[in-house]
Image (cartoon, rainbow, N blue to C red; front, side, top):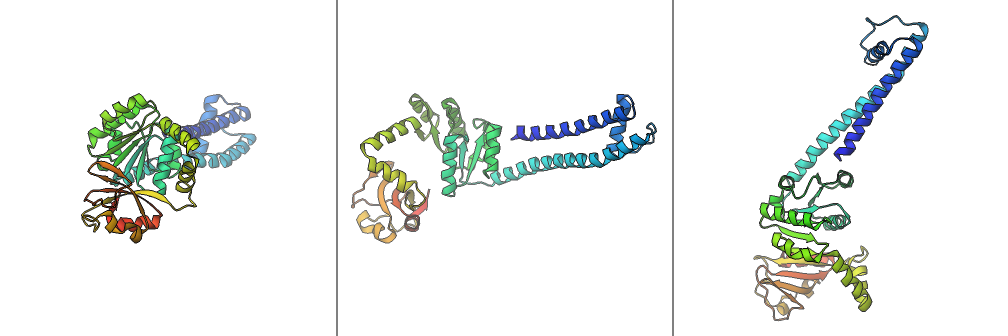
Length: 331
């Protein structure tokens, strides 16, 4: 982003000095002056300083000067206006974005605007989850900023950059870089700045998973492993794959899975699954329950809900919203 602004500013300087040089060469041809006198005449003409110390102009020189003033005024005004716009947009835009980022609470931090990072951001946008992106590449940072995302151009493993992303108040961070070493360093830095933050990291090499977990990652995902499993499932259980791809990932189908946490205000706490009537009340289906750190799939009807349980439910957005009203806060 900074490089793009610098190139634009440099282009304006080239236009300005190029036109001044063009004007000086014109005086050299018309009035047969030396380069210094011609350059001096061009500068004071474009800046409208005056002609008190210049050589007298011939008729052709006067005509040329009139043309130079008429054309030069537009060029100089255009260049100066563009430079002022660059300065204001760069400084005010950066300050406005940093001010917005400084107000974020319980947000997500996405590291990397590659294909993985873009998919994560797309999901966050669809679910209206607040996030800030950290990208070290200036061109990708500009693309993300142009797309309307909150972006910090810098190294995500730097404590200073993470602090600018308000990591102290963030609820999670996604390490989506294609470099396992960089993701490990980010996880280590993030955990040191916020012990409670949830870290999800991408791992290209399965052997680095243990290191990432030791660095603080709560979940490590290998895209190659997931891709292999999905391809195998597509062969052995094609209908299951079709259901997940078409129903869960297609906007036409308002059906998705959600994670809901039970809180103390919830009336479900202390009730058995069979007595809670969740399906009849909300329409959502309970697929699993995370209770005391243990994930219970296809829970028994006699399961007693406890404070802090995480429910994995399937349903439409309306059904899931009703479940949230029954059970607590969605995370």
